Length: 86
Image (cartoon, rainbow, N blue to C red; front, top):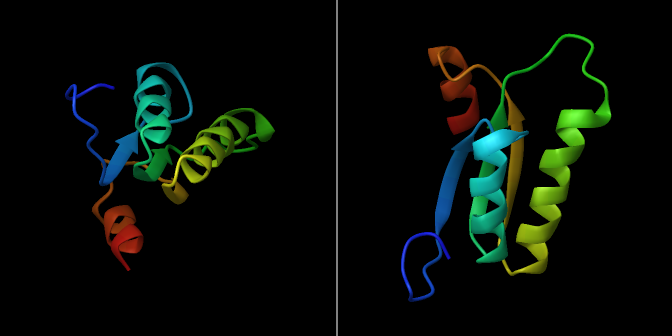
């Protein structure tokens, strides 16, 4: 558990969730049953690689009592955040 020795859960927005540190954080939160918004930049011509990683994290979250969604957008773009909110 990342945050405490006590079980904490809630909703988290994880950017960079397709790989690296973002994916590692998302996996830890997923195992603890958090509801997740998994976000990474859209890549032109993206094959199933990065999106598959986020799907696997989401499956773990659902199996642990959480869940969530996957969104592909650039966090620097205000319009993208508005679309996520809507």
